[in-house]
Image (tube, rainbow, N blue to C red; front, side, top):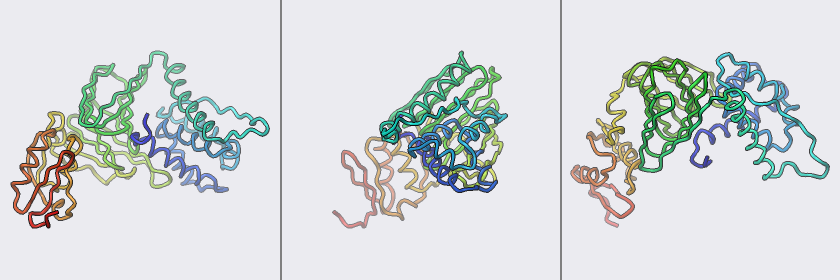
Length: 353
């Protein structure tokens, strides 16, 4: 995985660092400990990244001894979760480094992190689940892809999207690392179908739904059936929340914080991207331009804040940036300048360069 494109890993690494610092106090209070354990339980990625932070901190043994509980006991507690959401990992083996050897060098630390992460996933996928299947799919800028999964479900990947699918005897798990994906879940499989992002867990209840990572937010739109959504607390802020979302509704989780309720949404507009379309009804021009920029080579640039707030409506081919530019030119008081790499939008009375 490429770190600068893997939003889930980046977010988890930052959270792990915050938790590592918080756990160095002599006696963390109970709410903080409970929040930490909830965060640890919520994803195997959190376990891997927390161990990675401890390793990079130069002395894993000291990190464990300074904490109120050892890393091993915390992981045992996480593995005891009845919901089975945590990937088991082998107990840590402590070894004293040879004399005069700097075991905390960058090279050794990165190798150790890779070993821990790989071993934990591999152990679960092979020793515990010999019939497991794993696959990674991704699209680049402007690409879309339709994939049929092992159980008959399908996942449609939008532009700049990465997913990692893990199927075994007991569960169907998809990690959405970046971008946007539409899931159509097979009804003929009794195994739980889950999608994990950096700040949410979505459990399908015989359904079709869309999940998009948008900045620090996870946006879940249900087209058919229902999903159960559980927020993942970020560092020591807040606690896990859960909500069932029905067809025709959308839920946005911002930084692990869930709103009081979901909101009604035009689902056909929300998934218009499946037909390579962009549908907008009195949306801010800046948001519409940003949506076009997800697909086009030439990027639309609007620096004027007033223009960015201008409400516009329309239906366009997501890949036909020129038609959208022509639409903008038809608006009163708007001027468009084209270059090979940009389409600049400005007010008609703006000073000529």
